[in-house]
Amino acid sequence: MSDAISVQRSAATTPSDLNLPDIPGPLRALMAEVGPKWRDDTRGHVDLMIAEFSEVLKLTSRDGVTVHRDIPYGPHERQHLDVFLPTGNVMAPPVVLFVHGGAFVSGHRNRSEQIYSNVLCYLAQRGIAAVNVGYRLATHAAYPGATLDIAAAVDWARAHAHEYGWNPDRVFLMSHSAGAAHAGSYAYDPAFSSAGRPPLAGMIVVSGRVRIDNLAENPNAKRVEQYYGTDASRFEGYSPVHHINRDSVATFVAWAEFENPLIDVYCAELVFRLAEAKRKSPPMMWLPGHNHTSAIAHIGTSDDLLGKAIVNFVTNPR
Image (cartoon, rainbow, N blue to C red; front, side, top):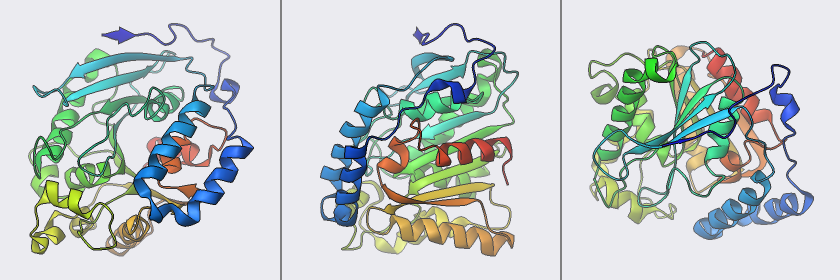
């Protein structure tokens, strides 16, 4: 099913012409109020930020993007994806597959009408094909079910490159929150990434849970156990950071000042492990004033530093 957001785009139109909306002062004030106490009610604060940023993102132009929605890549109802394409004359662009979060037991690729399509529209308006990937939750399949779904979605993207016009040799993964656990296993664990498949062109982690734990300070510990089981002795091997080596895919890492407990620590660990293994630091960004949800929900606003950094990385992965 195809939904053409815009079938034409003026040759003079550029991303800077799209009038990205500002994050309004009252929302900035709310972020400043909620941030220091984010960990006190992560689920409530996530819902609050989704609602607030969805309103802001209604003002974002979606010109220059064609969307094909609800395409199956597997038999399960969660194994569907949406394709976002630049409508301009872009020859064989790279393609970014986005993997949403949701604490392993919830979440959806379309959390609202604006989120997470804000990420995909932003990329497509800048000449990058983008795919919004759904996957099975812990209620449908235990580990490694969601990672196998990511593998199937990547295979689908390569198999349909000619149909949609992107370059099958420039496939990137981008993930947020628990989505980074699934995408990270595919990207770094040789049990998945070396299963006879071509390598990814790059990996983008935004506020990603790249280490698996059921520690008391993790408010989602029981949800982790629903997906990974209760045998914590297995968690090290399940953790994407455990599999980093000098040949790991080029990676960009970003996280917020105010995170769900330990996610900032694990993102920093990912940066360290990549730097130690490759003997150089990967590109990274720390987002002052932002929280776990605004880190991804603000893409498509005039607070454009992270978006520009991601586009730069896709253009030049390193």
